[in-house]
Image 1 (tube, rainbow, N blue to C red):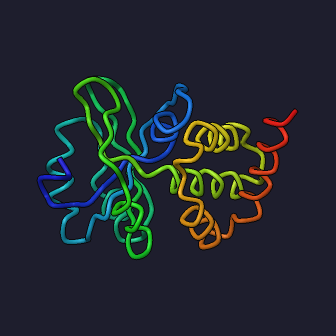
Image 2: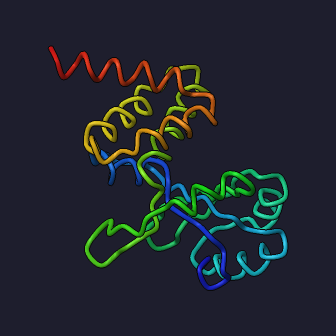
Length: 178
């Protein structure tokens, strides 16, 4: 639906980390979308037939760079749409078309972006979410040498989570040695 409007978007969150790391259940799907103010009304018209969507909340989210929700009537799946602009649109540009289930290919944030975003949420949550930290470890371990270390370190530095990344890498190193 966003493609029809020319809105760049990608899947992030636990769905992306499950594909890049180890599968786990999740209660929602997180999208990031570079939805412009002049596109929001058309996006609402295209998305509302799928299920519950508060048009005013969506307009406010686009204007303020926040998120809005869509609840699919058929599956009762909640989709969180994070409205991004500027530097964050780089994540969308780095996304990769990935088959997430037979016949369903979606643009997923790259592993490096998932790692730093999960570290960011872990930091914002007061270092309390074992789930966020576990997702980071899983993606790092599953992706291994496929991770672009230079890109990962630059992204972590940009989001001020480089120290957390280094701590996690040290922790993984200890776990694999002993």
